[in-house]
Each structure stands twice: as structure tokens, then as C-alpha cells.
Image (cartoon, rainbow, N blue to C red; front, side):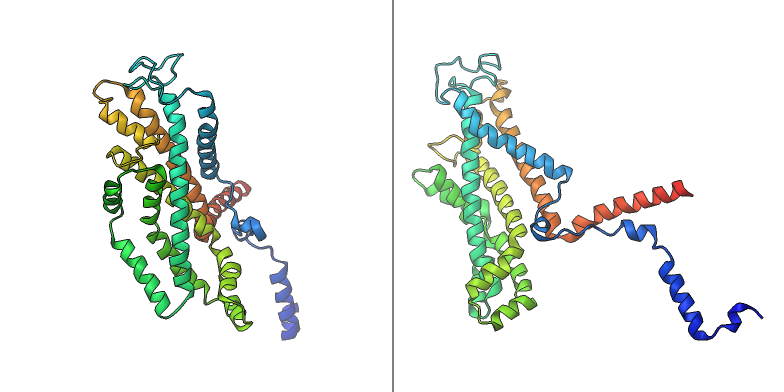
Length: 333
């Protein structure tokens, strides 16, 4: 009689359990488990190629906006030769009025960044008020805030901005930024409202309410930290929208009248018939700068999206781990 048949059922169960415990786990299961990050690191984007490229692009443009105006000539100096092509004296040539294009590009970088930051700040503040408050509150207060948000969503943004800018007697850079800010917050507010409504049903929020905490403290301490990645993404999107919106308004002649931005450079190039005269150095550099800044901010925004949506963060790494496991398994075989 075999040894297996002489053992009682309890001994057989112990032997089977030991075999299960001692058997090594599958390689695919080990390598596909993502490394968890805790604390503040969990709220920061992972250093990916798109994040590095985005930071380099945005950082280079910001440094250019800070340093270049200090080493270039007056952007309104008309003593230079008109429509001079790029040379050692004028690296990016001159305009029809003799303005140095490099000097205008440097000062225009400051103007465009200021417009983007002001408009982005206004948009994110309004989205916090109408999004987070509407998501946390209930009853008629939520309905009123949600109604205002829905009305602003259905109103077309660009025509509204054009109407407001056209009726303004003097369009300063701050006024254009303000108009762009108050017309671009509704989409972010809608997203924040949905996320806040989900967070207000969590156990720790209920615990704070039961403990008698004030609503303001609950919003600032319990809800806002969970919205920081989403707020950062919405802020970057608002900056992109503002810079592109200002460039579009300026190209149509509705931009700032007393400041230099990349959009005003494009408007002057269009009115000066730069394309017809072959003065490519007049309109190509500001177009490249707008595209580079938008691309850099968008890449950073994509990296932040990986924090908001865990699937975007774990899926590429899991796919790479599976491929590595399959490759190592094939080599071992």
C-alpha cells in the first residue's frame, strides 16, 4: 500500500498547504505589481520623458523672458534698418518700422506669460468658488452655483471675449487677462464639482462632520489636498487657453493696445504684410514660441493626469513589466 493511502486526511491537508506556500509565485505576478509611493511623493508626477521635455521647454522660455529683455535693445527703437533679415547685428532681423524682432520677442514673452498667469489665477479661483463649494454644499446653494456654471459653459467663450474687448475703450494687458479669466473657468468648475461631490461622501469627511468641524476647515483640510493634482492640471490648461486666446485676440486687433505680447507681434506682422514681403523672421519666431510654450505646458499636464487617473500611471509600467517578464522567461527557456 502506498504512503499516500496510509496517511489520514488531516496530514494530507497539511502537506498540500505546505506545497502551496513553498511554491514560488509567478514571475508575471511579481513584476506587474507597481511600486507604491506614499506621502508627498504620491502627489508628485513621476519623472517621465514627457515631463522632463515639458519642464525643459517651459523653463527655457521663462528664463528667456527674464534674461533676454536685460540684454536686448528697446523694443520700440525705430532707428534700425527696416525689414532687415537676420544678421550678426540683429539676430532675428527687424520689422517694417525698424524694431528689433529679438527685443520684441523677449518683451513679448513677458507680456504673454503675465497674461497667462493672471488669467489662469482668476479662472482657478472662480472654479474653486463655483466648483468646490457647489460640490460640497447641498440644497438650493448647490443648485444656484451649478446653474451659474452651466450657463457659463453653454455661452461661447471666444465670441464673448471679442464682444467685451471690442467695447473696451482702452485695452490694457491686465484687462485682456481679466476678460480671458472670467470666461474660461466654467469647464474646470464642472470637473471640480463632480470630484468634490465624490469626496464629500468619504468616511473621513463624515467623521469630521460628526466631530463638529466647520465646513471651511473640512474643505481646506480634508478635501482640498485631494484636489491639488486636479487643480494643477486645470491651472496649466487655463494658462494655455489664456495665451492662445490672447494671441487670437491680438491677431484680430482686439489685444492689448499699450503692451507687447507675442500676439501683438503677429498682429503687426499681419498688418505690415510680412508674409507678402517674405519677411518670415517677423512672424515665425512668435509662432514658434507660442507653440513651444503650449507644447511644454501640455506635456506637464499629461504627466499630472497620471496622478489624477491611476490607470494612466500603472498601465504603461505594467505593460513594460509584462514584456520584460516574457522576454526573461523566453531567455530562461
